[in-house]
Image 1 (cartoon, rainbow, N blue to C red):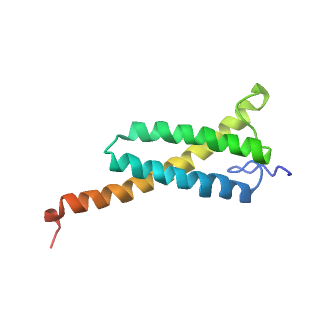
Image 2 (cartoon, rainbow, N blue to C red):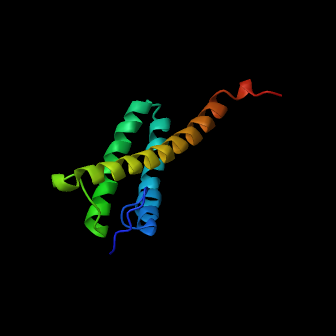
Length: 115
């Protein structure tokens, strides 16, 4: 597979959308949902998203010929795309957390509704 290396994707846009947004995004949404249901903090969610980012980077590396953090020759490229993956996955996890948390608050504090 030929590398296109854009600012957001390393191999191709289709591979980025499939692995990071669809597969990783589903896991990130579940992370956000679970941390909201467990009333956990943002720090725990950030740590879980970091672990998910490592898994997503490994999928990019092993299946599509992307870079991983080892060997050190590709470290900076892997770090760039790892940060991109982390930001995308954290945003999806935050959306899942906000969605679930707003439903929790509306259910628990329904008497505060305006109107």
